[in-house]
Length: 349
Image 1: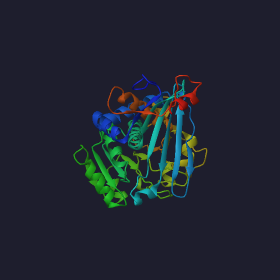
Image 2 (image 1 turned 90 degrees about the vertical axis):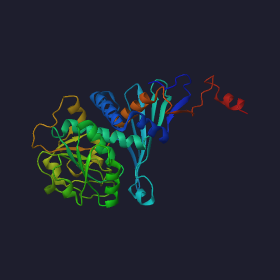
Image 3 (image 1 turned 90 degrees about the horizontal axis):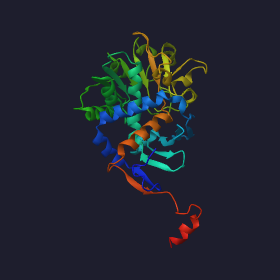
Image 4 (image 1 turned 180 degrees about the vertical axis):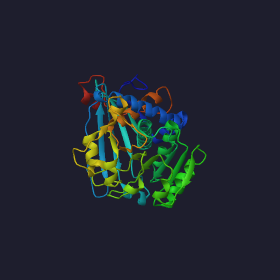
């Protein structure tokens, strides 16, 4: 791993929110989604090279704060992320995040970046990358249930990677649906605003659920799911938070990122510990089967995993190199004589 400017290892490249937005527009939203999906898919193929641990979570009555670390032996990365559903009513983001990469050999940070926008992009890129392997071939219509901050990113990722043509939007808050429809206008997707979850699923080959409230709220009931669909369950997962009726899980073939984390936070927390699931890296590397029939119900029980953030951080690090889309932070005390830290402080007077 190298700094965009390696001339001074004590200066850490930092990508602010403003520079992240500039970078996205420089690359193009759909091209960036495709690039992120490619990077994530490549890392899933080398899944066994990574350190893997469930994220470290600190839960409260109002939300959760998490750290998501991993390493491939050469680079180390982590993401700080929160999930506070009540924030929306206070004019704040439900999810905010930042992330860091470091060189394993020296321990020095090599990148610090905002990850609120980047998490939305990498989550959408992961969903579409997974759908490429699991969704019905030629799927053109998606139901998007929950039209908050993720919905537009999810829609555009499915368009960029699968060729999605239609999105059917539903949210219990009509203003959220109107917002999503307005943001997607002119971006090449036919948008249908629906008045119920059932209506949104008419003709949909992909069903995406994305709600944030920290409670067990059944978004999809068993009778709503027909044969052959792919379910992309990406809602704000945590213990006690589910979106799908348990009966759906018994009918579907379930695919997960990292079972020890998903069994605690995902839809499968409703099931017995020994209920069979397939790890996505095995499908992507060709060692396990994905979709095998037109009538099969596939379910991506998405909770997000640190390797996806690692992939996103590495992608951004490569993209900002030799660009103006970062600034250098003087955040590491690095004296000329590494044994003389106090001397550096003394001379500063």
